[in-house]
Amino acid sequence: MLWVSALLGSGAAQAQFGASIGVESDYRFRGVSLSAGRPDVRLSLSYDDDSGVFAGATATQVEFVRGLHSVQLLGYAGYVMRVTLGLGAEFGVTSSTFSGNTRYDYSEVFAGVLSDRWSLRVYYAPDYFGFGQATSYVELNANAPLTPQLRLFGHAGALTALGGMAIVDQRRTRADARVGLGFGAAPSVDMQLAWVTATRGGPYVVEYGTRRNTFVLSALASF
Image 1 (cartoon, one colour):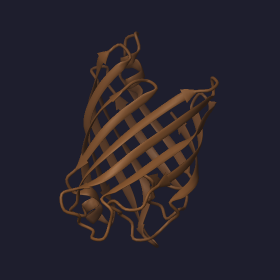
Image 2 (cartoon, rainbow, N blue to C red):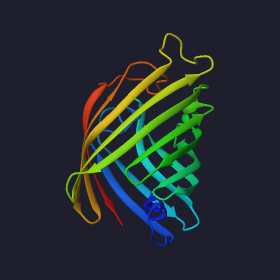
Image 3 (cartoon, one colour):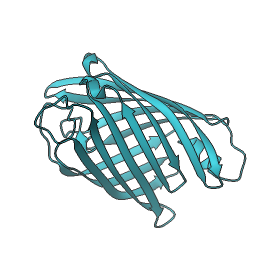
Image 4 (tube, rainbow, N blue to C red):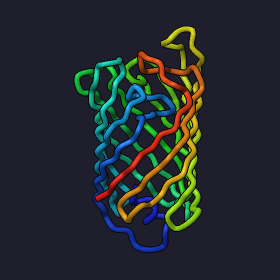
């Protein structure tokens, strides 16, 4: 989010609009492929206000059942505030709807703490992907610059089913991780190569199997 760096820095913040288009070799959401292991295109819009309010939306093609494509429209909104110099707190909500396949529609609320180099967030969904399953998701994200253009980044997360399991014979928790390198090819272009992995179990939303470990190549152009 554009607001985070402005909030945690010492300068005055200003409201900002953003737009981007990205391509990636595989749409991996919390370690699970939602594109049947194939490339996808993502369009995004964002708004960060100097009051701490932020909002945005993305559109991505997904494939829950092989051969049946739909578009995920994900909207989010929230509020971030500075706790100390260099540390912020945030909370908000996300909501996803799927064109032609609304049975998967779901929403989450989230809260977290963050700095310009790391963030820790907790999410809660009362009906994860429309499966009648309440879940929590905890994620830690971090990045470290190696050169002015090159950075190392990492992610670790855990999705846990709450209450009774909607899917029988399944482990209650699935962990996922992502680690890779990001390269700022130009002021508005970013490229990433990441290794993504996930354990078995946990609430699983797709009806086909893909590799649990894979490399994902992506490119993002911002406007």
